[in-house]
Amino acid sequence: MSLRVRSNSKTSVTLFGADYSVYTRTVRLALEEKGVSYRFQPIDIFSASGPPADYLDRHPFARIPTFEHEGFRLYEAGAISRYVDEAFPGSGLHCDAPQARARMNQIMSLIDSYAYRSLVWDVFFERVRVPQKGGRSDEGRIEAGLATAGICLSAISELRGDDAWLAGSKVSLADLHAYPILVLFRLAPEGQELFKTYPALSEWYKAFGERESALATRHPLETSESE
Image (cartoon, rainbow, N blue to C red; front, side, top):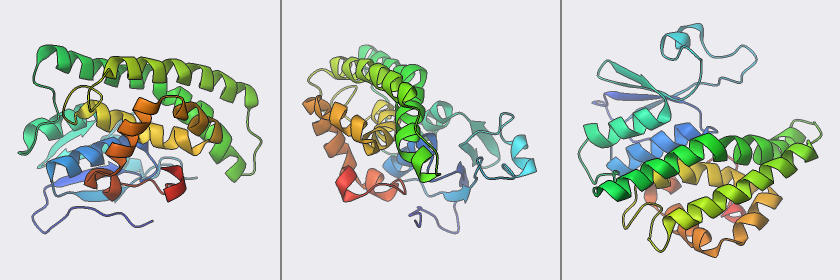
């Protein structure tokens, strides 16, 4: 899959990551939403040889993504996406009111602490990636992941309430944090079925998926059937 990246000869931003990574996509969504030109440098931390040796200079734990802007280096997607929002002009991705901003941060923390591992590694990876690699899915792990996923989806749905987006009336970092993870979760048949039981979240998901930023950063496994 070819990456559509905003870039020009004056680009001073470089993002290091992989198109399969949900957290790399979170940062790419922020860059796209803000209209920031950037260079994308692929880093495959799961390759047989691992990431390049000098990559540890950018991230001591050899994770992705990492980021550089005019010599300023960052790692951790939450820190990077917040920096992108604050350092570049354009529509803000933070909620202005204190309570809405707190809700945004709460949803982001919920996703990092509870949703990511269960929805991506326990459900998507076990159901989709393991068979692709010739292995046998761990059904117990999938079952446990789905149980946690149900709690996560219920919590996100309740926190969102009747707002258009996850943390209010405009797109925020909460949406950018959640969407890539839910894309992968829905690629597992059980994930897609569970997600259907949350019609309000399904409407949100469809609306966000139609944004230019989402279309420009599609995961390699996304198809019209997975939307």
